[in-house]
Image (cartoon, rainbow, N blue to C red):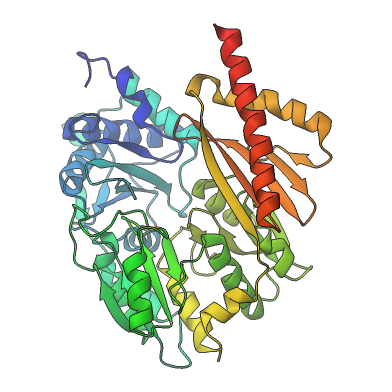
Length: 474
């Protein structure tokens, strides 16, 4: 894994939004101890952490290795001189973040690998206000981790641990925020992940009839992938229809994302769910006019929301979502195409638990089913492909292609990659992945033929550009 004291071979586990690796290949207890040391050192050197006034909250998900790694990570943080509050048990993501928020923690660390397979693990970092660490912050922690320049006080200065979590308070807090006007039935697919620990109980607490599916904790994720999507939620869709449920919800492995199935079993894209919730929330908070949506979200937002609404397009990534919601106080909702959502009137972190709660409250006020609300939205056709692109050239390819496209197109943005707009009819996004050797092309159009034609055209442009750069390097 490493050679002697050389940890540079592990630099790749530090990603734009978190730390991730395979257990016993890149991630071990010793590695997590060192990450904890680096994290604690970073907070004190770069973020103004005061050992006498502040503390860090640490929790973990249900993965087989998470408890072990959390203890090692906590030991590293305390070795740097920082006091911690420690959950003492596995928590759903939202319960972790709620506990830290209510306790006014300086920062939060959650041991998880989110939706990845069970052999993976890692850690996510957040500030006390719920905003995730930026890529720049994560890279600073990486550099401290590799260089080994840690703060390590004597025995009199090591941090102390207090065991505490507010799982019950989390349930009680959410139960006071939502009210049902009529009874509803929901199928809840936790995928054997961390949502098993709180989701069914929280949904019941507001009066929902809950039909549980895969709601027993199992770190092997034996029944479906921990990534919820149309392909992995087929059983959820089936049971929604059989039980005549009002909707279904499927959570990812750690519970920071949720995917909704309507009353016909149709699995909805996250931006469509977000649009429906935004429409409802505008009726509750008419003074909040801003909807944050990343550049991959559907044009249906602009087509369906009132003209007075500001659809603010931002970079892909939940860190940008939470940071922008913190800065822009008129934000109604923040929507990520991957399924992360932020509801600032509740709190700023992307707790997926809020999605089915608001949806249930909304449906309880209506005589129509969720499927009818979806059918009222504009019908648009989306295409998404990933083109292989080596890490050492993918960003150069985007930069070079951007200049060419700007010269030949009227409406081009570079918010996050290359965004090409064709009015309210269609758009193209060409964006380098932050997590792998690929460039994604996403297209949306009013007809399937138009979407297919645009995909062929821009996929060829990108492949030609990659070949040009590759040939120049040979």
